[in-house]
Image (tube, rainbow, N blue to C red):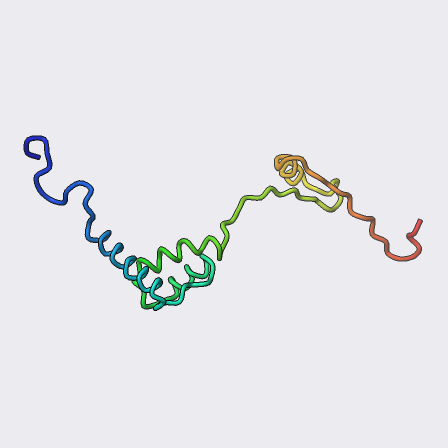
Length: 124
């Protein structure tokens, strides 16, 4: 920088080429909508994103951006859950390692297994 001021390149606050292209495209599209040359999209935001990322005539970066935004609605993120397990069976038949595993996992809930009956003679 010469004498504390900018002397070359794009001036501060001026639009770059990409922004100028976007503004021109937006102006053309707005004029077409106002003039009735284009049907206004009547779907919701997710439908519009799907339309964009499935349209093979669009540029790939635009399609990828649309897919990134739409994926949250199509494949919700997994969330963590707390498991509260119920152990069925006779706790007296568990090994020491199994018991330690249940105790170390939090508050174990152990239900005794129902007694097996072989026939009507076993009914009390």
